Length: 559
Length: 81
Image 1: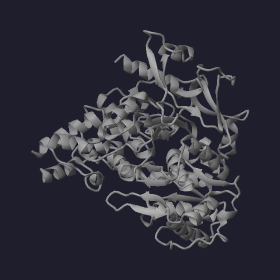
Image 2: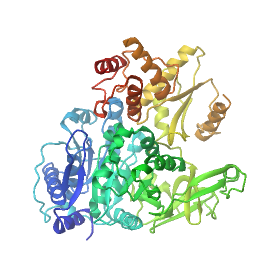
Image 3: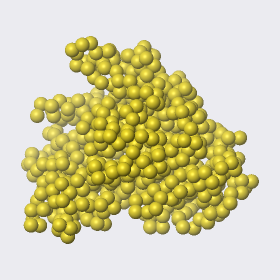
Image 4: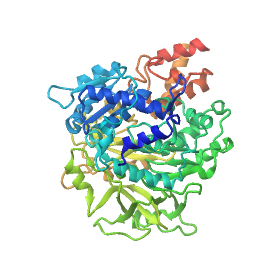
């Protein structure tokens, strides 16, 4: 039987001394972990879960900073047969009250049996719990003792391929209430296909990552794939990377990294914010595929990155793209490795007014669309019109997918799972078109904002803004506006207010910025205060976010 | 001297990081713990300090424990000039 535990056992039996991963932490020596270390450390955690009477099939929530303990606690849950889920740690800016509320609502829905955290965070975790909830144990780091795994007693050996192996949550109240449940089989179906498309060779490939593990790109491509498939992984903390983006390039140099994944903004961030002195000795010639994924892919970001790092050995064809989502485990498409990504020049006006990606004729204003590549071989992509009718090539509609690696469901949310599928197709909420078999994503139907690869639900931000004195329920709207310069979306909040005094308005705007920043994963910059009746509502009285976004952009353009 | 360092920092942070050129940052106002300067902007802050004052702030120092206000940042800069 093939599941996560039997796969780890194979690595442990056949090459226990092979390096599985290298954990990097700023200011500390890199720590190299072999498969023997990994299995022993994780088996220690499996014993701990057993001692706490956690049963196979129960959910274990991990709230831990980047660390070796996080790795062992995660795979320990897998070995025990429990279902791990990693949550973001409380950041400096996030208000503890908000974090507590979000954690409490996650506990209500996902019903974890245990929460694992560091001793210094225990009080915070306990304050979110209450008598009678599902959590029977708060397990602290520092108690585990590595042991040789006894596979005859490990619950993970008995897990069936169709059973749920992990949950994945995105941030914010909405995201935490929608845990994506994946089975062993879905993850293997995805990764067998995806690793073949990338022509992965475990003997030669090295994955270097700074991505957080509570996000599909970091978790699936840069954590599960390397560890389950025997590819060496070099993993650093997202907190270290964002303060020193050069660390990624230095690690690629030092470990001869071949594969990495980055959200679009990170290409711009690296190109613009790394000083020359931090690039001394950097050699990126080993990098064969750097995949742009998890937010809209833009040619401008690739150009900036390629230009900045060409002198450091970066191969231009190393920059590739993917369209992925946690609901399909990860990748839906991937552009070809070792070949340039296709750029499709299309008529801008036809895209906007006729919903057609017509090749641009000479002299017409062309939009440079970067391809997301072809579907991976187990996934079908189809474009649907608003009536659910399949569309021909170059017609823009909603992207639908079908595969053998879809989510089992939104955990304990059968209502949401049922709504997500129509005639066996999962409708992604993204708009796009197919040309010559390649997918191009043009926009979004769903009210989701993606900031630096993070999924943000506008309703969460609007609720936060409504807490501010002077802002009224139903009279505030949040949406994202893509900023080509930074390569990601920026959040805008428009709020109606009843005051005219500029100082008073300024105070309200600053308070909205403060409350939203402290209560969510974004730093809010753009607040636009408007008089009553500015915000457009639908006939049923709901706030129409796309229409308000259009109105905002028009007013900004005329200023 | 310290007044002018604070003034320059306030102006640059308002323009380049907050994108609110008229915003005045008070000397005691929390910068990092409040999220006013978010993690993606910490590198920008280090670049501003280096470009304007020739003082290097190591990435391990880009946190609220090292400095969280303009006052504290000015002191850090002065101690290294």
